[in-house]
Amino acid sequence: MGNVFLVNRNTIFSLATIIVSVCVFIGSLLLAPYYFEGDQHHYNVVYDAMKTLSLVDAYVKYSSYIVSREFGHFFIIWVTSGLGLEKILVMALANSILACFIMKVSNKWGVSLLV
Image (cartoon, rainbow, N blue to C red; front, side):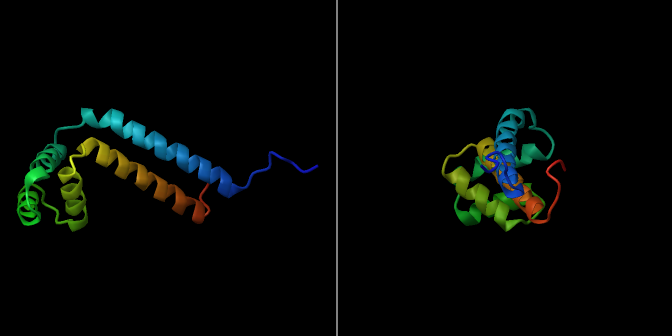
């Protein structure tokens, strides 16, 4: 009779990836409301302003408040704000996806799960 409890590294990392991603999502949702000053003030103003703006007008607004010219970030927040999604939810989801990718890359590169 084989060892039923024997699991491989990929299975452990997959489970850890799910746990870490969910924890990052929940943590982001819980902590984000407390971080609203500094650069977040500008990101919040822009996110709220984009809800009713056209793509061009939204980019002008974005560029006037945010120094960096990251079109990917701009486009994501323009679309999600236009859909009526809360910024905190969108950023929590983005953080969770980033955590998932980091876990996947860490597993691929053979990084210890403890790291």
